[in-house]
Amino acid sequence: MCIDTVPYTPIWVSPLPLDLPTPTSTCSKNSQEQREDFGEYPVSFPIQFYVLLKRAFLLITRDKTLSKMRLVMHMLIGVLIGVLYYQIGNEANHVIDNFGFLMSCIMFLMFTAFSSMVLTFPAEIPIINREYFNRWYSLQSYYLAITFADVPLQTICSVGYCMVVYFLTAQPLDIYRLFLFILSCSMVAVVAQSIGLIIGVSFSIQVWAWKVFK
Figure (spheres, rainbow, N blue to C red):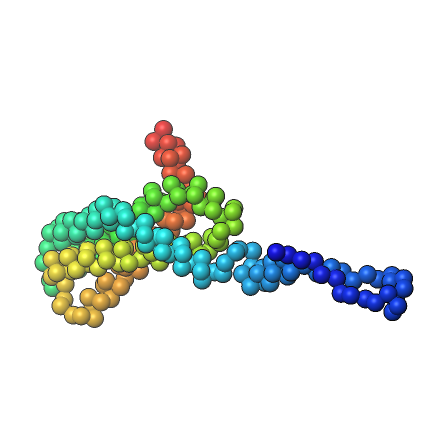
């Protein structure tokens, strides 16, 4: 309960007070302190990030079909590309083929990570608009949460794909080279995921597809 308090001034000290003290409200103090602590949102940025990250992980775990399809697709395409460039890694006369193999890996991982964000994120925009304009959280916390939530799944898919194609194409059995190959492919997928998120925010996929195929 909020109570406005005015400091007591004896009447014999100032019979006709000209400058009356301003009433102070405990509610205004609390709200002002809260704004100073958390800014324009009801909770701090770490709490926003934690709650949104937990919700994003919950959505991913509930949608097991999509997660399994992404992993199976990476493994199947890895087998196809591995068979296409089978046993070319240790052959000196297959330098151009190795270059094509690397480009195929980069293009596949980039396209899958890009399309997953472009096709799924626009469906969440109405929910984000409602929650953001209600000042529940900031866009920075939401972006970081969905990015960090999808990184483990994308990393697992990229690692599975890289392991399949690396051994099928008979690349040199060096732990350091295998680590660099997996790291490079995973970073390409994460960057493509961020670009897909930007495209999904900027454009409507339905309108874009209608204009392209009209």
